[in-house]
Image (cartoon, rainbow, N blue to C red; front, side, top):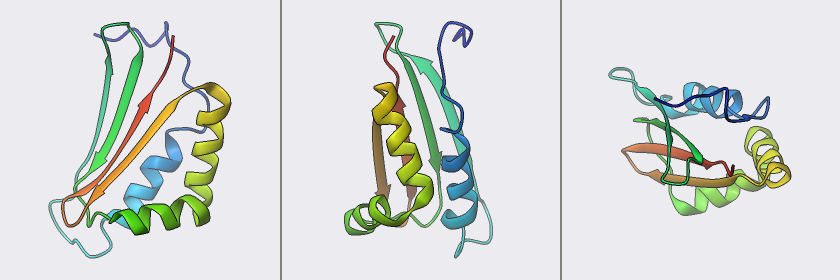
Length: 105
C-alpha cells in the first residue's frame, strides 16, 4: 500500500495525461477501451505512477512530434523538469500508450 500523504504529486500533472488518453487513444477503437492507473513505490520508496491505455498507440516519430506540439504534453514536461520527475512515454501501434512518472523522494 502506498501512503500518498508521504509523496508530493504536483497539481496538473495527471489530468492532462488521462484527458489525452480519453480524447486520442480510442479515436478508432469503439469497444474494449481501458485506461489503467498504477501507483507504486520502488525499493527506495520513490513514487512511480503509470498511466496506460489500450488505444491505437503511436510510433516514435509521432511521440517526438507530440512533444513539440501537444500543449498537454508540453505542460507535463515542464512540470516534470521543474519538480525533478522523470517522464517516460512509450507507445506501440496498435497496443496502446504508456506514460510513467518517476518521482524522487
